[in-house]
Image (cartoon, rainbow, N blue to C red; front, side, top):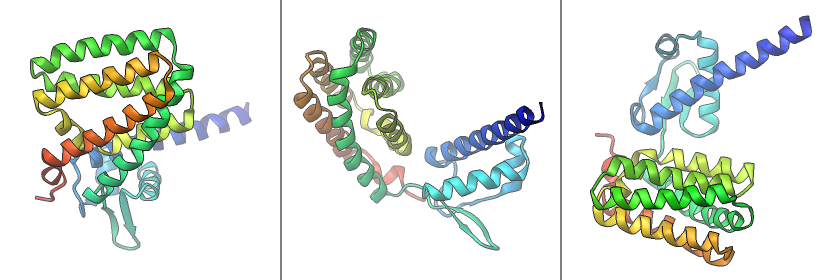
Length: 229
C-alpha cells in the first residue's frame, strides 16, 4: 500500500508540473509574455492555484526549451521565439513534414483519409468566405491528421512542438482569401499523393507547402507579430 501511494504521489507531482509548464509555455508562445518579461513564481503559482515548487520545476523545463533564462539571484526572464527562430523552425519543419507525409502513405488509415478529405471540403467552404478563424482550426487539424498517420511517436511529438512554437504567426499565413484558397489547394495535393501512396510526391508537396507558408508569413507581418512594441 505504501509503495502504491508513493508512485501516485510522484505521478501527481509530474502531472501538476506538466500542467504549469504547458500553461506558461502557451502564454509565452501566444504573446501574453513578451521577450525580457520577468516571470514571477509567486504570481504564476497564485494564478494557477499551485505552490512554488511545480512552478520552479516548470521554469527549469522551459529553460531547457530555450523559452526562458533563469538568472541566479535575479529571476526568470522570457527569451521567447525570435524571427530567426521562426525561420529555423520552418526550414526544419519543412523537412520533417515531408518525411511525415511520406511515412503517412504507408500507415494512414481509411478513417484518417476520410477525415482529411472532409477537412479539405470544409476548408474550401470557409476559405472562399474569408472565415479565417475556421480556416486556422482546419489547417491545424489537417496537419495533426498527417502527424497521427505517420506512425512515429517521435516525429509526431517534434512536429507538434514546432507547430506550437509558431502559433502567434501561423494565423497570419491564412489572413487573406487568396492564401487560404491556395493553402487548401496545397492540402488537396498532399492528400491525393498520400491517398495514392506516392511517397516521393507527398514528401515534395508537404515540404513545398511549409516553404510557401513561411514565405507568405514574411510577406504578411512576421516582424509585426514578433515585435516587442
